[in-house]
Length: 113
Length: 111
Image 1 (cartoon, rainbow over the protein chains, first blue to last red):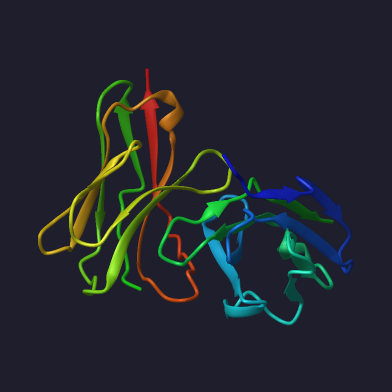
Image 2: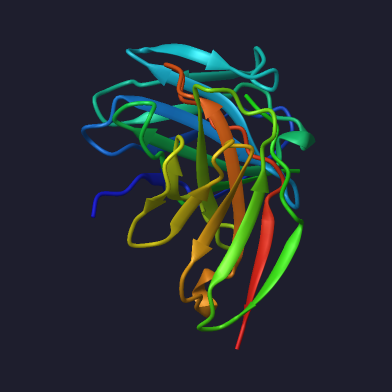
């Protein structure tokens, strides 16, 4: 069964550094998403992406965040200058259209020290 | 999107049906009810969704009341692997597709 993959599984970085989290959505999907989950808290929506542009973003997704689909397979989340509070699990998701289920990846655990 | 209310935790005996309730009294006519679950710290997993009719798939059944103000997710024969946090999400299907997760119900299946 096709699945969403994410790399790396765990990323440790120092405060102020840039990080890029990578996702490979399911190949025929058109809608892509990033969510995050701070340890012990609920899953939070960050951004949705369709047709090579952001379709919606949350208040969390400020100027420090950006997303890109650099080629036909990857979907990346960049955090320009990481803060301690960016430490969280980041999940990528995709689906072929908004009505149907979203397929989530296994997540990248980001630790900012 | 309408607000949902779920009990914070529930227990269920292995092999028995798990019935997880969700209250969404402010749901509007064009909002769907979705259920996802999250096992430990894995990515959320879709279970089922519906608008007003009851739905069933290989994982679960979704029962939506006639007034649509509440719903119940039924896992017919719970196993230990069904121990997870279950999220009831009510949303309009928009072009953005975003999901707004609440705190969910932690279901503990016990042997």
